[in-house]
Amino acid sequence: HEGLSRRLADASAGGTAVLFLDLDGFKAVNDTLGHHAGDALLKEAARRFRACLRRGDLVARLGGDEFVVLQALQGLPGETDALCGRLMECLAAPVLIEGREACVGLSIGVAMAPADGHDADTLLRHADIALYEAKADGRGAFRCFAPQMSDRLQRRRALELDLRRALGQDELAARFRALSDAQ
Image (cartoon, rainbow, N blue to C red; front, side, top):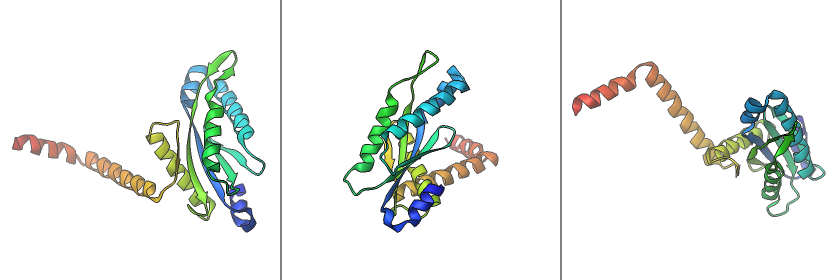
């Protein structure tokens, strides 16, 4: 967060891509091989991610199996797409932990500064929304933030809240009874 804030404050730094990474299948590694194996996998993932980055890029673990990469944009066409591809590829090979293979995938959400936000909180939130879209599309993919993603997420949350309220007040059962009585 601090690195992103510093980079955004430095006008000479140019654009920055914020990549929100989530390991697909990490819970299964923890559940089957144990938390020590999960910890070893996280360390190996971080090592592999660092190997994919250029000078000036930064990777940080946010918590759990989530990482953020800050990519210093150089104005090259497709540079963020290429980095997403490299990150996904570097994690595709199994990780050997205590003689056992652990396999995970990677989903990535991307937000670009300044186009998708001017402050760290907004950019991280937008990258997280894009990650949500990547996971909803079947995981193992990357998606770049678009404003309509936020709109879809807000509509979905509103629908979930309406359903919870309706269930709590027994409104759905009453409507189903009314429908069946009408038939």
